[in-house]
Length: 179
Image 1 (cartoon, one colour):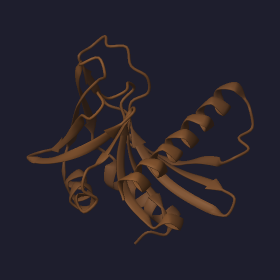
Image 2 (image 1 turned 90 degrees about the vertical axis):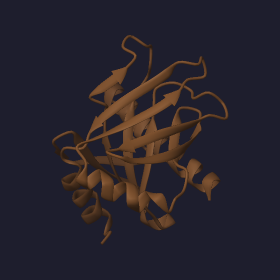
Image 3 (image 1 turned 120 degrees about the horizontal axis):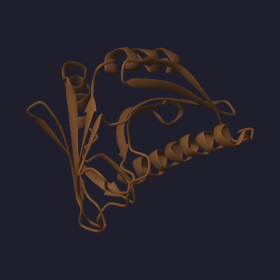
């Protein structure tokens, strides 16, 4: 199960990065078309179509990252639907650095904590059964904190606002036909 989630999340992150490069360089995106569905406070909702397949995702950037001044790439928290693969509300992050090999990350929403497994610069909820509980906490919470350790041993903490989360989730649910 984890291998499938890793591959799917890597594919989506690759599509997103490819679309971003194409937008910046003005190159047409041949493999996939990405469309911004809308923004809700701190969250953006997208649909990605590739052939007859459609995926929907929402993302937010952290409002605060510590320690300050650390050299990092893109940092985003995602919630993704891939109906063709029967994946709903998969939570993942990219942290802008490679995680320490064999390390885990932790996500906290209020008093609820969730363990995440890591690979390269990404992390996913350790137990897929916890994702529904995490989504519920995200709908009710004000902020989410993610902690991880880089391959260089730097402990980082990213804090994401959950303002607009529920509205963005409704947007991607509708776009991908999730009830």
